Image 1 (spheres, rainbow, N blue to C red):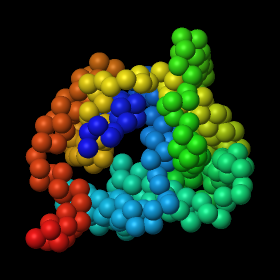
Image 2: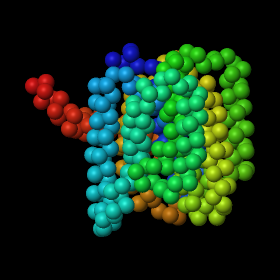
Image 3: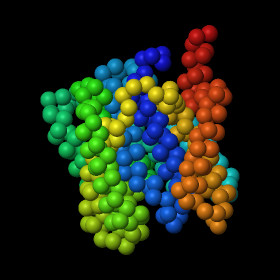
Image 4: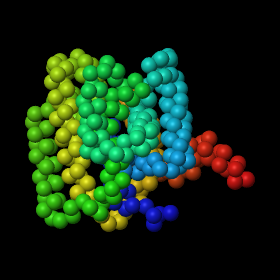
Length: 335
């Protein structure tokens, strides 16, 4: 039912999914002229936060049903994208068997985070959330020393874990959006924080290690690629965790609390996450290297992709195919 949805979070989710698409479009800009990379500090952490907020573990049947649906979407589209990749490249890669294709890493990480919360919630009920969140930050930092990168979404799952845990406990205590400061000064401070971090990162941080998302690899691998010591990469991850937390909270303060035209599209984020991949992969294959990919071009391409995906959303078969097996068996059960 539309009326039961939370307009605040629907607006936030839609803005974040647009930024996800924009971020993937900006990857066409190989020379780093697209300064929109700044939003990578907060758009994935906030997405993870929202996922944690809406994770419920008390209803066992509901939990496992949603887990199976997420796993189904992951497997179906990983198979599809892997087959397409093999056809295009004319070869098989064992690496792809253990590495989710492109943005599908998020679904595998989501399965990990939800399962971890489900298993540990009752056992850690007497532990104050502060210590659980602190432990998740420790995991985020220490995981970088493990020599595993994108395989099984390991690094990204660990890096963004604190934001899922914070979202889960924020929901548990009904902190959002009712208890967020809503005064003018809170919004002014939020804008000031965003501008301050933007200006600092614009002038000080190299793009190759310029956000929490871009340093979600092992320290050894990042040290090799960026030619800086592994311990410095460790410190950068710590710094980016702080930046991500500050920016995420600032953005939460700025999101309108009332129903907006964008809010009604907040329920489409999974569809957009999956189907925009086809457009992004096509761009990466066919976009001529001599063509510009500046800010204006990136924004235009993002707009066109969003319009195309919204058009595809009205094709019932494509929505059905997000969970084909679940939908098939549910339909048979009804009959």
